Length: 272
Length: 352
Ligand SMILES: Nc1ncnc2c1ncn2[C@@H]1O[C@H](COP(=O)(O)OP(=O)(O)O)[C@@H](O)[C@H]1O
Ligand SMILES: [Mg+2]
Image (cartoon, rainbow over all chains, first blue to last red; front, side):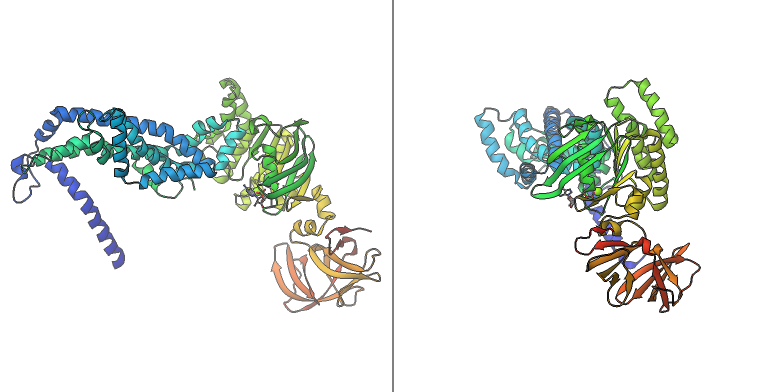
């Protein structure tokens, strides 16, 4: 191996470790007792305990937040997909002024700082009397899920060869059948990844949830963060357990569609 | 079975007119090949026949019925695309039967129609594979099967062999010819490859810049090209052209001179002659033209000599056994009955 390659490898491994070690540390600490946690030299070997997880899972606030998060995020993602995927198909296939503007609008939503959405949304929901409701958060999150789904699905549909859709037209498929039976199945891996990614984004979303909820509709990230607001006496074990719990759904999704997500973000077409 | 007729068909993309006034009548059972250089509008016309491209003006008739406004699926056509255009998410079997399923055919019926098609194209072993697991030639066979099973009135092919390597192209070309013999469906076949056109066509429609340059059987176009373009496009190696002036029963450029095959008024003419119609002769033969050998290409059975005579350079095909050294002086004679004369300005053929 040439020295240059060797150095690059080393840098890569180092960068990987920088990312992975804190995560592993969190995982380990979620299963330590306070006595094991608060020692001068960190312990790698210890007797794991389920206490922290137990504590987190048995809290009423966590249970409710988990329920909120699941309902709010999956509703926003499902509605976002139902609206966003067909929109992406139209943007990919019909190129005109209107679709170009729509695509740019979806993209521009991604560039907008969340605070710019949060404050007006807060005012709107308060005046509608729907502040701190699941509906309010679902509708607000739709701006995220729809735009992400569109943004990442357009290239997926653009990669479906036009000739294949033309063959479908010759085979007597109308526009809807062409979409459901041909374009969507061909693009499915990347479209699924786009939807999964939109789920991860809203699942982790913090700022909007913080500003649009106070008690009833609080999501998991909010409740998890509240656990650290207990003054100087930080319950590290519990905090880590909450973080682990919070990270599980995105990690599972990533494992399921990670490969597709990689192609969704790269420009290479899987069919060439 | 059906006839296809284009009546003054036009096509514009916005301001840009690609096809201005295209009229053509294709008979039942006929195999017509659209031949022409890339970008001349062959695919555009084929796609208008298929219904994949809107027709800007004129009438398109299939089987005597005006079909301008019908969907591709309702025109009784089937199409084979250059890049196969198979459904990548379906097995070979599903690819072939998809249209029948959509049309609501019974399982029984589909199976009965699938068998002979699969048999003809030798696809039995591939039925459960995905298209990506097949070679290009096999994929195009599947695409042909998908077209065949619909028993269309008109088969449309858009450069179906262009993505294949030379050997496979030859095989599949023979297969397409055999299929047409069996099925006898009206077919339109688009290609830029003259060999495909010559071997497959009942009739070649030679196109250039959105217009029909010449129409006729392969023999007619080869032996009596109607224009300079047709003469230059058809035939490998290509026809030689000499820019000469007709005067006093001779065609001459001041250095070389040949007898005019028929009386001509005094004017510039372009004389075309195929490399095989020129022969090497001994010095002193009447009408022998002296020339210098520039290059010698070995082509297997023949050798292709590049020669220069005065201002004119041209190619001569000779048997491979003939050896000529570079720079050597030779004498050639042009077969008088194989001269093609064209008006230099308009490019139109001049006949006696
Ligand atoms: N969608 C389009 N928009 C504008 N011009 C087009 C379009 N499709 C084809 N053309 C033009 O039409 C002409 C004929 O194209 P085509 O029929 O594809 O040629 P061929 O198949 O003979 O190579 C070309 O000059 C091409 O640039
Ligand atoms: Mg073409």
